[in-house]
Image 1 (cartoon, rainbow, N blue to C red):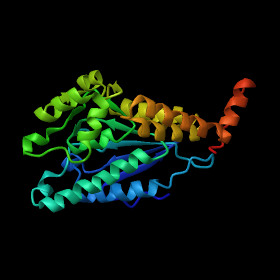
Image 2 (image 1 turned 90 degrees about the vertical axis):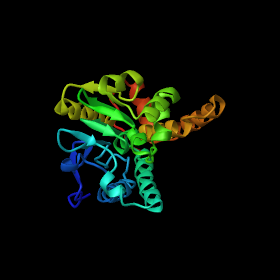
Image 3 (image 1 turned 180 degrees about the horizontal axis):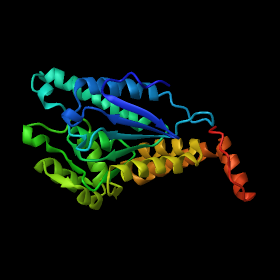
Image 4 (image 1 turned 135 degrees about the horizontal axis):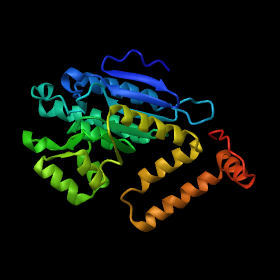
Length: 269
């Protein structure tokens, strides 16, 4: 797949990882309409990602270009001239981006270096998990502009950190540092600098790439489906996923290799 044509994204394959960087460092990678358009196109193309043994990509690393920001938020200059109808359309387009990221059959890791505020925090929340540099900061500052989260923060932030922390961050518009993000469960791990951050994200993708692709896909779909369900409904969804896993070639290969004390080569079927 050729990804060289994007004006606002840098896309590069590195082993099993596809590294995607929002590339507007002069505007702290703010989510202007042009960025949203490029993300929509990219996620639409990635919706066809395969998990069979011939498919080279096993995960996405989403980051921001430059040293200051992952994504500093929505493009406020552009938003300032929007009508309410245009703002709704803007939010719905970003919802399409984030739901497509969640639906990919491979993991998506947000590698956050610098600001992840407003729409940037919401974009990171749509990823499977978040790695951050120690200079990263997070927040939902929409109340400072008389607004509310519009790109999924009202939903995903409370799922990630719990309702109490989400309410506090959204009501106050407070910005938190990387250590606080780690403490409340917003970030999974911290790294000393951008190089270590990206290296860790790519290493995790490589680690996951050695696992059964159908299992990763199945588990991601199950976790998304189970999130927020009552226990009984969640257990029913889990056993459906367990049954589905047993019907795959990957499961046959994995169980046989374990019994033979061998290293499995998963076909992704």
